[in-house]
Length: 134
Image 1 (cartoon, helix red, strand yellow):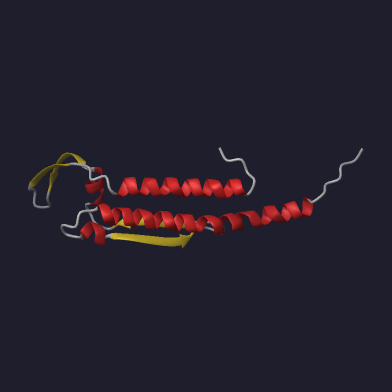
Image 2: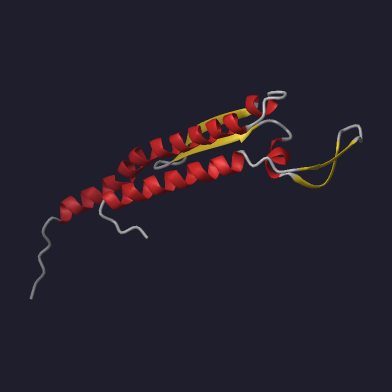
């Protein structure tokens, strides 16, 4: 009894090129998700002082041989408080009481929506390669 593999060399070659191929296809999805997050935050933030909008930035870099990292940040020191709110009383640097802050819910929802769209796109890319995605 013997087993003969047909197409094993082609299969190995395909597997060897798969990570780079998936990276090439998925990287634009990550860039689009970051752009959508930043745009959603720019649109949703109030423009009283402009610091929330002006503090937004996106940084892109390679994450190893087969990856990309895209980070959207806000340099405004109160961006977290604006988006998440505060439970306890807030005070200025001079000690003036400003009370509690309701959650603005701008940045995090925009990021979640963009991330979900990116993940669905990556699932479609992987499924198109013949894998079962659950």
